[in-house]
Image (cartoon, rainbow, N blue to C red; front, side, top):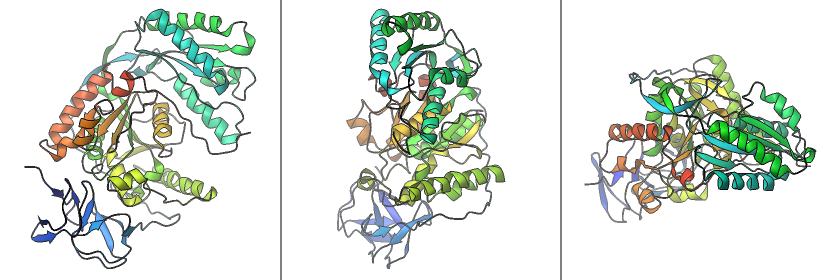
Length: 496
């Protein structure tokens, strides 16, 4: 028989409805019988006590806000009757809590592509990347033509990645565009890349090529369209050369320690912090114990849970970097005259999340309990194995692009509401509830909702590891099957 409600932590003074509960229904919570005063939607909270105005509301063992008004025992607790405790930019003190989960190395492997520089890809794709949005039409035509010529045989995919930037940008925006595109061009999931420029843009091809540093000239090629006669014919010559090289690549056994995984959530609901996000946390600890790497981003969705992450930093230096990670993002909101804590979204609220603390405490569970080994700025690539934090906003496609650009070969994306999108690396959707998985099988790749039904976390995690290994070895996720592949670059400044 399915559990009808869940009290997550012994300190909590609210419980979460697992199924819709009805007004007048009595539920037994520990040694207390509670009569519900309202209809409680699945994923939403109800009060386990009477709250006076300003009383703290506790979920996950932490305060997620305070009562705006008196709330009776058994009442529906939502964004209308509770409010965030967060306010302004804070000072922080380092109080390390370092756990090293005792997880055995199982010496697992997957079938990947070992590149000349030693990096490992989980896909063998040909990408066409523009330095500037002016040539988006050209790159789409080139990709379509190569697909027709080859029928896609010999490589995993042939993809164009248009974007709107590369010119009319100043300062940080220009640097961010260039960093992200450089990271994409050198990503190990790409068997080969054709970089297409215009000629008069800010993001000059000659400088771009120089900034790439050492690269495989058989796999990365360039064309500046203003300097050739027929850019389509010239581009096809280069693409055929890339294809000839890429189509000879083969998968080989690679240690799981080479896997780098991005952790992301979107369209979260009241089950996110109970099923899918904790599952990713268990997997993150497991992968780190195997010598692999996980990366957590979405800095605004760390607000309210940031001290947990700060105190898991391995050193005072990393603590200081995490403080800057958080406060720099808060300053970004202040500079743009926007409220720091204008979160959660309408979809989050409809799914049962009432405050940013509640969202953040659920969100940060994706990175488990491992020690923070490094903190990366936007556009920076991974250079330390283990758990990393990455500076990027919460926007799904911008954050997923940033995770791929950091070097993650795969993004794990938990969701309670659902989304079809995909970034330039495989973007695996993990549902928080079975209704979503059943209703959207073309979106959802793995259902964590079974944790609320008939599966333990341990059983679900074992199935998840098996699935991850299949995907890393070539099995496509839904965004790849449907060719939902995009990039988005963070823009914060002036456009000329």
